[in-house]
Image 1 (cartoon, one colour):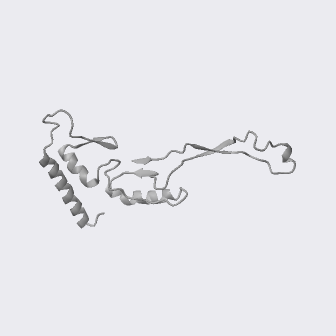
Image 2 (tube, rainbow, N blue to C red):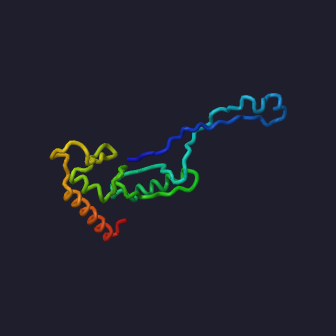
Image 3 (cartoon, rainbow, N blue to C red):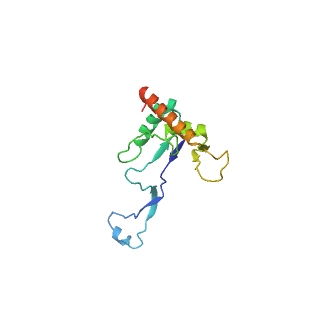
Length: 152
């Protein structure tokens, strides 16, 4: 899956002027100089994300190469960065699996819904503190294991 973060909504216009002999009789100068549309552009800020891609770890090299080629199509200097998040969510890769195991997150399309600790006190909605601690411990072990295996 990919997401394009910016849309080209700014219309570029040109006020064509003649530059040959006798053109002064045909032109009106800056009167009515709104111009005709010639294209569109997107206004972006420094550090703004342009394209986001998610995929399996087995396809990481292909995605990085595709983004490297895509950045050549944009003006300026672009940087390809690998995120620590799980897909397009706000949950890190190491927190997602344990949180999903104890039921704190629920997949919701390309994102996830994070269950808060509010609402009616029922057996289904109640999370014990030891479950949360266990999920954090599993995430920390996974992080250490991936670090020893050479993953970043």
